Amino acid sequence: MRYQLTSLLLLALALAAHAQNASKPLPSCLKLKTGCSGLGVCQDNGACRCYPGFTFPTLNINGTATRSRVYCNGTVLDGGSYMRPLVAVLRSEISVLNLILFALITYRLILDFRLYGRRRHIITKVSLGFIAVATLLLFINNVLDYWGVYGVMPPLAFFTFHAIIEWLLVGVFCAIVLHWVNIYNSTVKSIRRQEMIMKINSNYAQTVSVEDVVQSVTFLKIFRLPYIAITGITLCITIARLFAIPLVTSVEGYGGFYRFFNAWFLILWFLFGVAFAIYGYRLQRVMPPASSHKIQRVTGKLCLMALICTINALCMILLDNYTPVFPSLSGNVGLITRNYITFNTRTLVAAVVLDIHMPFSKMRYWLNGSLFSSHTTDGSGGGTEVAQIEMTVNNPKQGEEEAV
Image 1 (cartoon, rainbow, N blue to C red):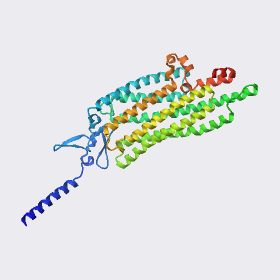
Image 2 (tube, rainbow, N blue to C red; image 1 turned 180 degrees about the horizontal axis):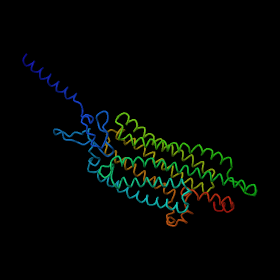
Image 3 (tube, one colour; image 1 turned 90 degrees about the horizontal axis):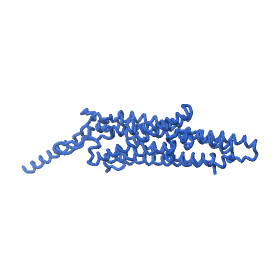
Image 4 (cartoon, rainbow, N blue to C red; image 1 turned 90 degrees about the vertical axis):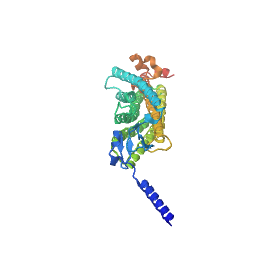
């Protein structure tokens, strides 16, 4: 009987100790007032949401390695011996490439001001200015720091530049669409001149009907409005994102906004690619053969870049750490993989936009402004194709010979 009572007493004490340990609350950044080391946000569930590049540190408590959820003073550089070399290679590559691109884009922008002044080719200047700022911010971010883990840049400053670049790329695509709408307007003027020539010279053959042109222009007047609206909405979403990352403390609220943001860019870039394909096809129908071929090449480049940006947005969802699709994926590996994809995608977009405005295939003309302006594509200057159209109208036979 005595042994039974002793056994029951020991069992009761063990159960009580287990219940106490099981009910022991997790450490809370709210109660401890850790401030997440100034490198994250203390959420309403008591856990920190660390800024990109920073993680929970691993603490040694009673001989046991434990990740503390109330601090954010761990970094992705602590994720393994391979992380520092990977980060160094990425920073070096992106810094060098974007410095070169920034210099070339700046030269092209200065050249446009010298050749055409301030009031002509406004949209071209805007698109070049946007992409120049994007390459400059990419260069600054990577040459100085990596998400602020080296202590050179504040984490939120790095994140702000990172978010602004995404919107600038959307703005560049929108600017190119508006630029092509202007090409349509120039085409309409040339067709009207052809109508006048037909009244004077009955032997002149018109290649495009006025009805087709009017229908295309009517379509474009409606078509460009969604691009402007989407660019404005994306700017508002980007600004909201800049405020959300340091201020939102709700786990569900931030998670929902984060998923919405990723889905928005996935849908946006996909629709941009489809719309460019439709627009390019309609543009070719009312352009002279030589111009149509150039527009086809530019449209192909833009559709390809929209596809790459769509794949990039999809990878951001699949490799996300905050709402992981693959829970077994290490956060450090996910971040560095996303950054390799994103940073290189943005650099490639900048290179393609520069190629549209200043083709790499015509590098021999780059240092000669007058030769360059006469050999550049329509997408580059906005005035060359118009000049070709006007030349074709004023001298139809000569235009036909050149088209051959």
